[in-house]
Length: 506
Image (tube, one colour):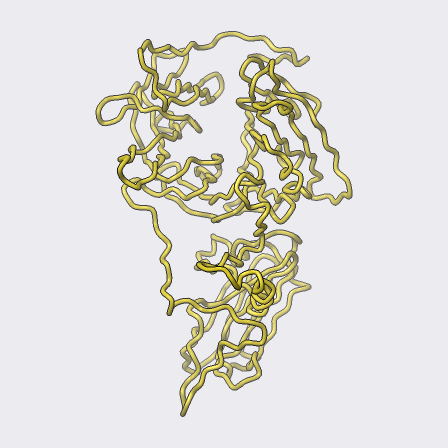
């Protein structure tokens, strides 16, 4: 399809996918996909395992060990120095019906060169990706998936289940779990294994570090910089408590150094102790930004998960006790500040995913964030853009963009999670930077088939925001299959029986 300046379209055939004549048709076949390698060059997948580059003699077949075609879905393609590299998904080995093994899926990169197909690497996982993007600055795929992928030759890592004597109970209001009935000169219990614990609110972050109680305040040297921390504790006395030391260690996000302070309490709980508490009270520069960790990944510091203050846990436990007194089994998780029973129910707004980066060259997986709620992916376009995602935060949607090896909070779509919760036939939720979010209905049921457009305001604050509703899919057009942005404010919507072009959405 060619779109003229006046937005009228013309069509011409560039390639016809050969149709295989067969008495049986595979139930595993995917939809055909065509992706641009570069100007004037396409890679086309027929969904059954054959790949074509039009206007050339290059045809490739993806087969298994028996020589049978392997159906696959084409996700991304790029030109490298060694050939055309295609990212695909395919089904893993079919489990034995008598076993309890679940179906797995494989994520693989194929190198296509001179009619030879080579598998560069492959990963396996229990589910298909929800979103795939490519970071051209680091040559990494940014993949959002309900479960992380892992190398196909290894088993998926399993989180260890602690024994009863390894778990710590949640304190009730007024309860002191540190009180120990001791006799003689029994020493204080050892400090936690982690170097610090931390918690956060919408506008602040609190970090607590244990130090020997004999440490004088003059020995603590701290610089709370806008983007980094410098901390050094000068002590010549031997201690079983490791002393923290950070030199220009970058924060996960910027802080307001003028409003941030630190305090030192030698006896934080008003009893004799060998352990004091150094507390850093940080004010976030961007209110509402949710910190995933304290330090940036570039710092190479060990990740420490966010914890809740014991008094806060005590209040939560006290308020829920009347509802849980008759319950058996495991208690529901309370450590997730975004947890909302109604919105997190199956079929509700957002998809729980883990966000990971996968090296395009060797397939190394690095998980940026686990168990976050994905609201929107970037709308496919012909322009090269930085990876971005809209994540749920309470009733809002937070737009994050990956730049300089970090995820930066760009803007907030106010009440986006709330308005999306009312949609029951959503096919795609896509965003165009911080300008708008488009929620497309599939049109598969009567009375649906609209696109709901929610406009953003970037970093500007506004009390009101414009919304629009346009009809796209209906009984004449058929269900919606895909969406792409041709240029700013112009969207092409592929339906089963018609191509619909939307314009004037800016």
